[in-house]
Length: 245
Ligand SMILES: Cc1cc2nc3c(=O)[nH]c(=O)nc-3n(C[C@H](O)[C@H](O)[C@H](O)COP(=O)(O)OP(=O)(O)OC[C@H]3O[C@@H](n4cnc5c(N)ncnc54)[C@H](O)[C@@H]3O)c2cc1C
Image 1 (tube, protein in one colour):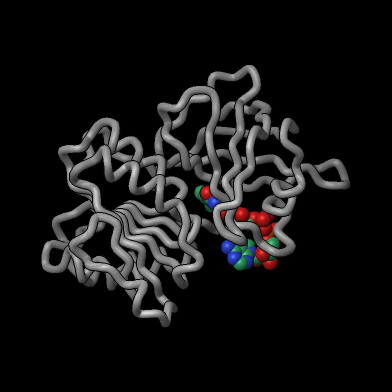
Image 2 (cartoon, rainbow, N blue to C red; image 1 turned 90 degrees about the vertical axis):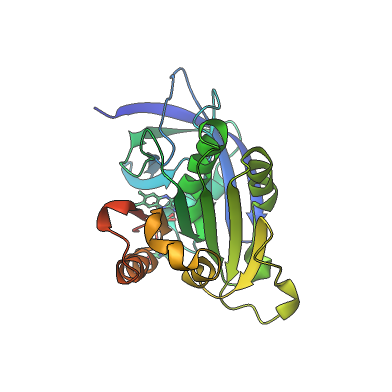
């Protein structure tokens, strides 16, 4: 059974205009999760009921006593609006951990494809790989509209500094400024186009040999699944989480 327990908001940090990192500490509860899992927040409503919203842990599972969520703030959004109004020190009822979008015990060479806050569970997975599986190749292709929407670059560079076989690419789908583009040979690369464009440019003919972890909005995840199937990647090598509303 999934545990229900209170969590206390200990920090809130703006990453870009519409994305914030929230740090929570479980109150009197030893919270253990696998990288890739999520919590279910109970968001209190005026009528006394609570609405439930799911958010993936973005911090390393090895970090004791607290966890981070990376949340897109949506205009009129019940949960994201509530999280923005919470005071530091306030508590919230939570259930967790839950979810099957996790790494296998012995990870293979892997590619991570994220759009927007779909990076959250993947950040936790990448931290785990940097702690335990640096012999395996790990590529991240992360989709943004443009250069001004990019965040978490220092955290990714830190993972790259520990994990010699990790490379990440920020794929800018609507950026007009060509001076943003850097060389694909760099471990933190900026390219134009969608995440599959980055994947093709960097991994190319080797696409079918990797395991894939996809996370983001449902339409993007579906289209990436179709794309990978078209490239001959067996279904068993594709793992995904859809951020359905
Ligand atoms: C397994 C799982 C894990 C998830 N993890 C995360 C996570 O780590 N970070 C994260 O930010 N979200 C995550 N989500 C999505 C999250 O659960 C909420 O659905 C999302 O934050 C919107 O909730 P809300 O209450 O703020 O908005 P709501 O009150 O549900 O929505 C308000 C309005 O905004 C629309 N809307 C909802 N989502 C979006 C969107 N993305 N863009 C534009 N309009 C939208 C709705 O259709 C509605 O009209 C996850 C979802 C799942 C299923």
